[in-house]
Length: 198
Picture 1 (tube, one colour):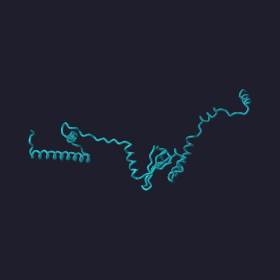
Picture 2 (cartoon, one colour):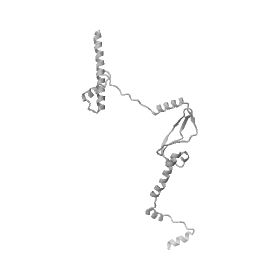
Picture 3 (cartoon, rainbow, N blue to C red):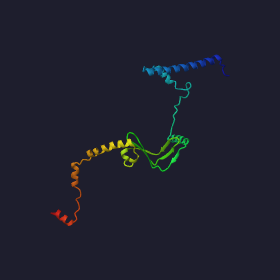
Picture 4 (tube, rainbow, N blue to C red):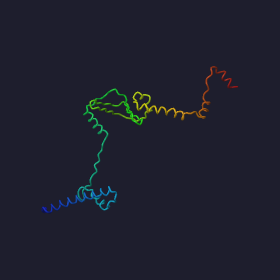
């Protein structure tokens, strides 16, 4: 037979539980306020709070940290469902897409999947992207450049001959190596061999 519990005992139990909850809340708030002010925390209170990581009393399981695993396929499915709501259409026949940044780098997509919804003013480009420098994409990208990109390209072109002249000046070693090259062919081989023998 179970012992009888009076209303006063239940009231006392609920009251102590509520008071304990308020006390814990008070401790957390005190820690937060002290942390914001930069003062030292009370180590006893901190240790007491760290010991209370259990959901129930002694012997119960500790709280589990919920780990959310997100995969690229899940994100891709969400994106495709959002695009489907916008009623996008596939655009065929696009071989490459180049996005030119302000710093002179280019995001290059080769054979991308392009989807567009003109009513929603939305374009989606999916595929393998490479980040390249503007100079690597020349001369094929010249027709795609705007006025801002052309001025930055002009500055690069002005700096390029200076760098070439500084780095490609003929050295004495290069001149000596030219002497070791194969001599020019002469029309009459017999005369050339007689000249070498003498």
